[in-house]
Image (cartoon, rainbow over all chains, first blue to last red; front, side):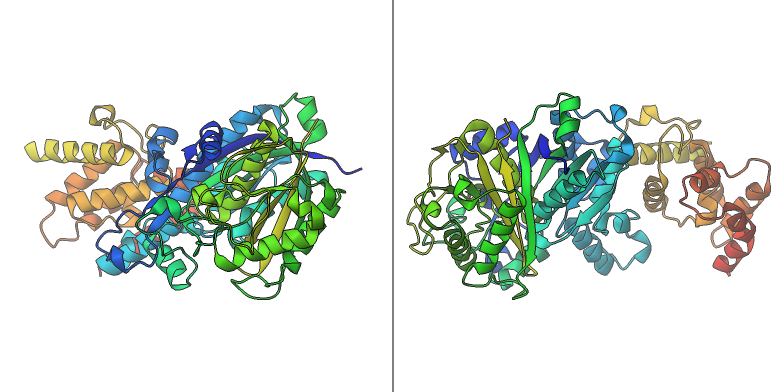
Length: 417
Length: 134
């Protein structure tokens, strides 16, 4: 029989706080982590379409990492390492008591070491010194760099790979980790999603793609407003989320505290468009339905949806359309919230951070607010969306993450008792 | 003597800066790989810094012979005291490479599977250095 899979540890670095306790408190309080983008050297900042970002402002690498790592590792890897360590500590997972080859690492990384890549490239062209490129550059930009660093830091010798599916990367990472444990390949998995791409090139690129909010440059905290009529694009964020997944027998054997169960997962491709979801929401509904089927759970049992909801005009309404299509009458009963309203879109970290917010909702019986939901867009309006925290005992929750490249993923998390 | 002390001090403080440690914690007897815990990438970063500080270029083959902080100081002193334009590294680095103290730095690197085939590299060391300076 397939093993059940549970979450036993959490870690997060986010624009509203480092550490799960701080993150969750701020999320419930409706704190916005969106601020004006700091100047990029000599670049003309006014020429950027979007000048608001969800930046991690309180992260001091030297406070968490040894000096050389604090100086040399890319910011995304630093976020990932620190979040992973919090999750491992939180789970009280002691590697010296584990079979090392049965503890693996799966990382969701979409952009990877973008900060370092841009810096080294710029320097190469400015200084014209090929022999001065950082020797750590190649091991950093290979997309699996963070997975390797985590394995080395903790001695996790099990399967180690990276999933790169843009904004759904780390939701897929959770799903694949669940599959690995279910299949009996591993006892426990360290799952991390990390991104730190608030760089001159990436902010410009998402800007010219017309994906970012442009209307609220003077009021950053109002810029990320999923489901609101005034939304006009997402806010580029950064951060990392980490979860420890393990088989239920393994968690019980070591008397771990169990946060929730990862009960189902689905991954699909819309095979439609690189950056735009299919308008009718059928593909998103299908993905959620497949995840529920995997969890042997009926749509009518869903209590909460942690929506992908990035605050783009099209994306938000298609997701709600998909939710309505799937849940029918139940769509008016479920609670829905958009974590990106307070932290922006953390790209490949979003799946993990959404799953952490959902796990905490299950733990605390509270769903965090969707900030700036002031003037509901009729296309997105559902009774369960609110600009304030909502109380509900959640037994079944869906976590959605959709990504460029026409790919969708949904996870089903359940209360464990 | 002053030049010698000066090079030693500058090198120690360069190493300290790279390692983000106090200069008093760096002695000439410290081994780079063992005591100072430099991995192969750290060592290259350190060489960048030394090359900039002393305004010279250190060939890979010379770098392989550095075991202790003191070796780097000796090497720099030899390089810096050489007549301008003279092939200093050839004169300075070649004899010690063939002399008794084995290139521990290189061996350690090989042990960590960073530098392939230490023997082959050692054999090639001379002609390579000669070619580079030709």
